[in-house]
Length: 459
Image 1: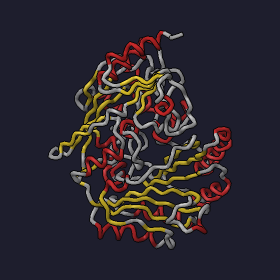
Image 2 (image 1 turned 135 degrees about the vertical axis):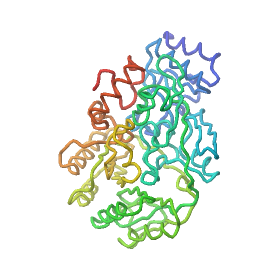
Image 3 (image 1 turned 60 degrees about the horizontal axis):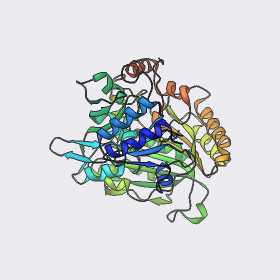
Image 4 (image 1 turned 90 degrees about the vertical axis):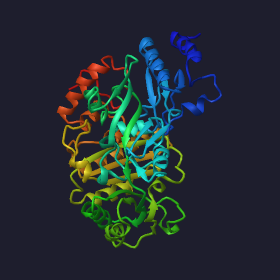
């Protein structure tokens, strides 16, 4: 028997430019799948929006019927917020156009475009916007949460290059938003996630970045190497950004067989400046230990997003910490906990921050904690759903050890299922109070709640 919501969804079929995929469609199981496959939810329908009017119709339907609404850009949500049990998934993946204004150094991009595709499109003109570090992440998800990638020290967060947005609000209205039009909403979108509407297009600043010195440096993991890498990255010119994963070496062909399963540091880096200066900046990292692999070389920037991505695991238990630096003994703590991990892929990712990100005034955007010097992202990835609790306990123990038991700030993008505690870690009190005010204005009934949710009554 069809529910009222089912009937309303079927009525959309003739009015959408996109398509509706229900449970009787042979594509349903593939289409409902998200990156972390352990979120095995069955929405009433997945709507692949073809344009902004489709988005407005779906938002209106969800509001009028009370159906839960999940908005999916790339589907990488650590908390599974890109899908719903019994609700509607609004899939933006077909809305992926990029329009480049090379002379104006800006691009209009639909938010279903993937980070790698956007970077390749802009890279054809020798231009770039700093996004994340994974090609298949959707623009909408990463841009609204902040955007912390290979250019974070050189040009700041993705939101620091956000110039305007098109937003469908909870009442189905399309708003053109920038620093002059709906400035409160424009402020909130830059770091406040998907709490305030469905962002369908973004206008982003482009920087002249073509050839860089970049790639991966693989080193044996020791306390001295980890601490030395963090120190060298922090002391390097702001042209250099480093993202280092401390993990057990996977069986990759460029890592010696005898090292497989042993701790390594897999450091990806980009120096967005003159090649000779880049080689000089990276040199101290190469001398920390004899590398197992050194793939850092002059390349075109889009090559940082090249190559296949591994299949998504069932889940990624963990959290992240924004810190002033590694504490004394922090590197030893990471290695000791890595040794006891039982997940298939335990990873401790370290991102050295500062530079342009830190020069934006506090309160200028909704992103909190601009002065953090380091982000540590703790992740226990596995395909065995029944062991989630064990891996969550491991990640929580490492987080407590690194933080000294003190509640630390966190980055929105890498917070999992932490509820209100996660929200309060992500946003300083004044920022959260202001976000709640914007929420009450644009989404008072909390239609957009599948996210790191700022509820209207928070503050």
